[in-house]
Image 1 (cartoon, chains in turn purple, red):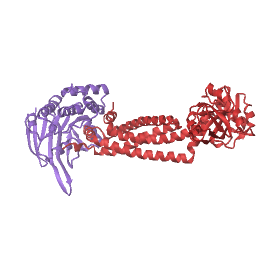
Image 2 (cartoon, chains in turn cyan, orange):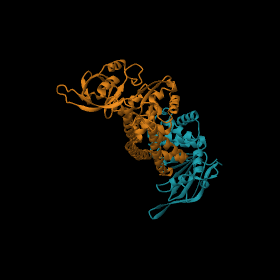
Image 3 (tube, each protein chain N blue to C red):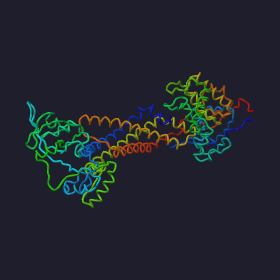
Image 4 (cartoon, helix red, strand yellow):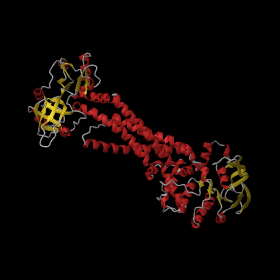
Length: 233
Length: 379
């Protein structure tokens, strides 16, 4: 059986909107495995983004626990959670969130420097990561000179360069055309298969289902359906 | 190159307001103090360029300006008691009335002038070191006077003209540069001409004494030894110390310090408010990028450091622009013979002031980072 990467139990979260309280996560149990792409699908407002925020240490749930890589995430102090993310987590967002001043190589190098990777090694790893996402010919371009798909690939290289064991992607293809979307999801798939990362991808793009090892459907803060497509080894 | 510096260079338009605010704050303070320092310096030009190594003033004097009472002439022989003293001469400055002989269509001008008495021979302690040989020779003629080029227009005369000083005719035989004066124009004459004009006072009291020593490198020790010989009857200064004290006295004058203090307060206020607001706006424009770094695990402390580094670079850019603006103002002042001076004692505090403004603005802007919530990037 594959190694379990993240195991969450009883996650609940509610927001106050005006005077009403809205439950966005309702006692959700969730797990994900290394080497697999777990796709979380559902309509807007179903709680999928809140789920990955809680799983990744970005937003504390009201109830429940998250065991990530064997550690109880929400029992840690804030600084330790930051450190956990720095050491183990990669993120890909719908917006690419690249610094306009930095070229592709510098975007990746910047993050590696925060991980205390030394200058020449950071550069080498940045170039390797960008080569892996097929951007070896765009190393010196700033975001303004890159297409949407290329920007997302830089963001993926930035996330992958840290060799994360947990890779969270939130609607990574919704701002992209179908060709770029395919490229991006293939890269996520490869991150799982070749790097052994647990990829948790939130999307409502049905074209991505083909690349999923497991598909979880959410609605109204609950998991409605959990289909394992690729059998666990 | 760091993220902060790359961002500043790439998005310079976004940060321009902050850089300009800092430069204007720096210019405000430097131009104002530079003008006052220049005024102070124009009063002490003749001392700064005197070949004298030591000046002797009355015992309680704190600068050249505060010794109107003069000192006894008998101090001169006392100074010669020191074996290293080579020459002692009193510095003579007095006032005279100067008027032109208007040519056709010219208006008659009459003004009070400050007369600086010089002994026009090689090595004289009263001869400013930048006076050329022809100027010195010109001064040797009776009734010859020398003016700064910048005052010719003000006095309504030209080189080679005749003019009237205290009722007697004098010849404008040469001009010099670098002796502009904010108030009364300076007129240089020889001691002989000054006597002919009746403006040399040769009574028992003298003004500041100019002293030349045999070995200029020992001026500091000789000053100490002279003060010991004097036993409190006079106070000897090295030329450099006196020059600094003169400018210091100028700055301590109530009005000037209030004006400069006001400029500093206004400069700091404008600088901080504009720099802070600009920095905040610029950070806010990149807040999603900062949030994505937070998501990747970069701590808030590291992001704060980026902001502080950014504000420091803004400060340095502001300093650069200040230097350019101040150089422009100084060149303009020079072109119009307005005396300005920027001693390090003013420039260094202003450099620190600008850097502190930039750093404080950075500190005030840190709050905006709270908006970099990575969970907000999830939709």
